[in-house]
Amino acid sequence: MDTIALTMREQQRVAVVERVFRGELTMAKAAMVLGVSERQSFRIKARIRKEGVRGVIHGNRGRSSPRKLSPTTHQRIVALARGKYRGFNDHHLTEKLIDPEGIRVSRETVRQILRAVGLTSPRKRRPPRHRARRQRRAAEGMLLQVDGSPHDWLEGRGPALTLVGAIDDATAQVPGACFVEQETTWAYLSLFLHVFTKQGLPQAIYADRHSIFWTDREPTLAEQLAGQRPRTQVGRALDELGITLIPAGSPQAKGRVERLWGTFQDRLVSELRLAGATTRTEAQAVLARFLPSYNRRFAKPAAAATPAWRGVDRPRLTYSLCFTYRRVVAKDNTVAFHRAVLPLPKRSPFISWARKAVDVLVLLDGSVEIFLQSDRIARFDANTTRTSGLHRTNGRGEVSTYGPDTTTAAQRYAMAP
Image 1 (cartoon, rainbow, N blue to C red):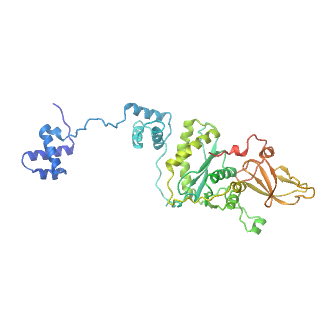
Image 2 (image 1 turned 60 degrees about the horizontal axis):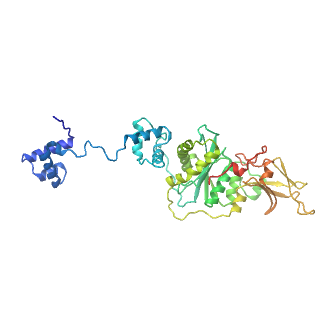
Image 3 (image 1 turned 60 degrees about the vertical axis):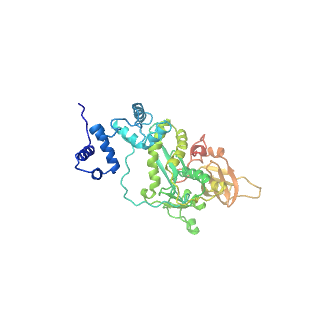
């Protein structure tokens, strides 16, 4: 004799219909007790009369769902999570299973499969918020948050790298980022050149109080007479371009770029591992492929449809996003600049630049140009300055010397396309 297991709800239906058969309830009252329409109550009564207590059991009980994953697919997902996509979080793994693996599953299904075999997500749940979030700017290009993230991006497979990048406050889109050896003025100027050339000039830059952006030194006599506050090379460049530099008071104040690094240290590290990147050049190539997909996945529409980017010509960017120093020409018509002596060409035997105050500009392509007020009086290309040691700068924006090099500054700090 077969045993039939009924749920509490099914047992109630059987009991109510039996009272109808005994004449204790009308079908109208039975429908009210069962919480169904009177027509449905007649259907239930007919099935019980025909099949007995089996008539209250749903016809799909015991059947497998047509959307249930096959054991082969289930095993493949577990194998990919333990092998090729080891370390990917649940959302990231789900995206990879859909494209390029061609396994269309939901994130919740992936979570249940992985937890059943003891695989946890490397990205923990976000802690409770304890600060009120600042409202986003209305339009794209109104504010860029910039920062650098030193991290073991290659997980020991290559050199230590720092990722320098920017995020738009209104849309959460990342317009540019690059891997560098360390967080330097040169890295940020190169980042700005890439972003400003592609997008335009933003209204403001939001950064921390790193010495690259901010200085607390006392103003010089010349700065006091000119009514200027002390500025770093980055601060001067942004000021010349009409961009407001806003210093953040705490890491939480620039939370959007900090959360960006949390996402990158999860997803981008997994992509670098998947690609087997071992050098900065390989990491930069992976980053170039990663940024478009990241922006499609995480960017948000701005409240205002019209962007706030401002146009600018390339020459102005070139001569603003550089290193500028004031020097005095020596009696022999040369400029001493960081252990290098740069001879100035004579335009005529009767004209000398001696004792003139000139501006020495070290451009991002490695070349050096010397200006007397607004007139360029000399230029030295990257091949000449390479042997003089004028390429590299430290974190404070000061040019430091080093021996002959075989790469130019533009190659060293190549931007993502």
